[in-house]
Image 1 (cartoon, helix red, strand yellow):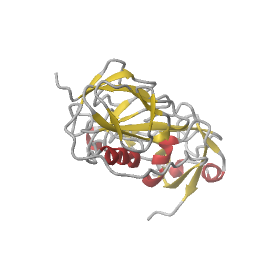
Image 2 (spheres, one colour):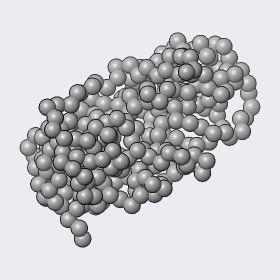
Image 3 (tube, helix red, strand yellow):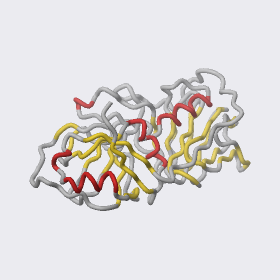
Image 4 (cartoon, helix red, strand yellow):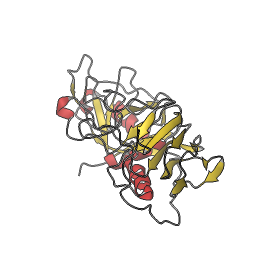
Length: 289
């Protein structure tokens, strides 16, 4: 067995393999998936000396613990969390040398939700439809990590980056999501459209990689009845029967039968990856480009 491998000692609440996803397969019912915060995934890859397509680990809330079989360089960023190697504190947001057999611990998030862990060479699980990403909705890609999982690693693409430090942006105190009208905005009353733009919402603890659920005033529909299932896009703001908006994220379904009142601009979605439950959410209508 190759020594280019990584043993998962502690998988944490939810740790998945992610890369840039599977664009272009929605017509086959396959979501894009990929890292919820692609900018941070790209950053840790660069720090570890990987190319932009290398697969990384995305942790949720309580981190993970890993033991490489050979010496590797790792980089951790995203949610702020303690990092250690064999019990000794290590850098967050910078390349870290981890000897063969040493224990890398990525601790619980002290700010934010998801940390990203890049390992030199990248996680080299078998790709599915051109991607190594775990898709929680469709089941494509590797299963969420479990204690004892062994992950193969690729060959390092280059040396780790030389940096003095990485910015540590705080998780959003308020999640501001710019929206354009959705294809079914006319299924809602004028009061509902006004409420979406002016009322206070908060991130629900039921949020996940499929969608960011909100708590707040229910949006009143102007039309009753069923809507035939139709195509859904990343950032679609769907309104289920309880009237609370759901913002579709990376593992969203490609079709759905609840009306879409708005669509969030893609540039605003990465912040949703780090918005903890209870974070205020504000929907800001903007003009179509």
